[in-house]
Image (cartoon, rainbow, N blue to C red):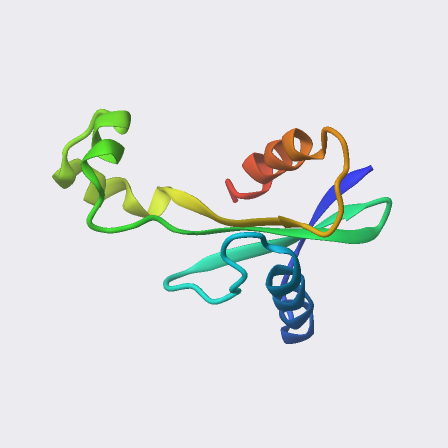
Length: 111
């Protein structure tokens, strides 16, 4: 069973940092700018990855505004309701896990 567990302590953040720095293929850094929420990915109660969302960018790029169908002024009003998947890093390959993990992220990240 796949679960997401919120990362809350400094000890947990250090474990997550090591996972990202060791296993993330193209940006092996745990540092970011802005607010962020991270979760461990667990499979059968084993930590097998990290996923996190961070603050949306401001000012927004034109493509974001076009996709959302809003103006820059409107974006400012909804900015805090938008998050960016800043990292998704697995320590092992698990068939079909990505889809399940992203579904759980959509559920957890709403709150």
